Length: 84
Figure (cartoon, rainbow, N blue to C red):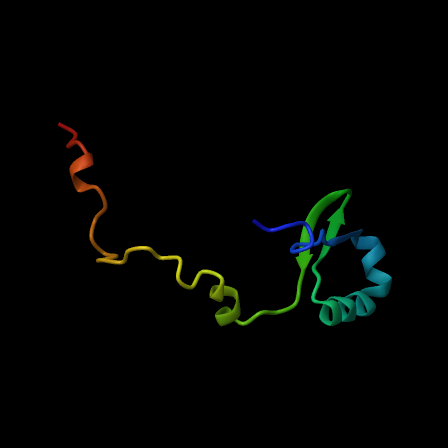
């Protein structure tokens, strides 16, 4: 089980707070690797986080497929009733 230290709460600020210091905030995200949430009237609208190549993003899913027989085969065909 993951603890709170594994996923820190992202820094949140309004778009108006972000605008004058945008480059500084972008550098901070790049250097720390921590996400930044921008809000509009208190509602989260944008998440800024460091770029991760697809291989890195998908690495967490590697090994989680338990069984892979035929992905194009219909699932539970016998469970469907024909509409007559």
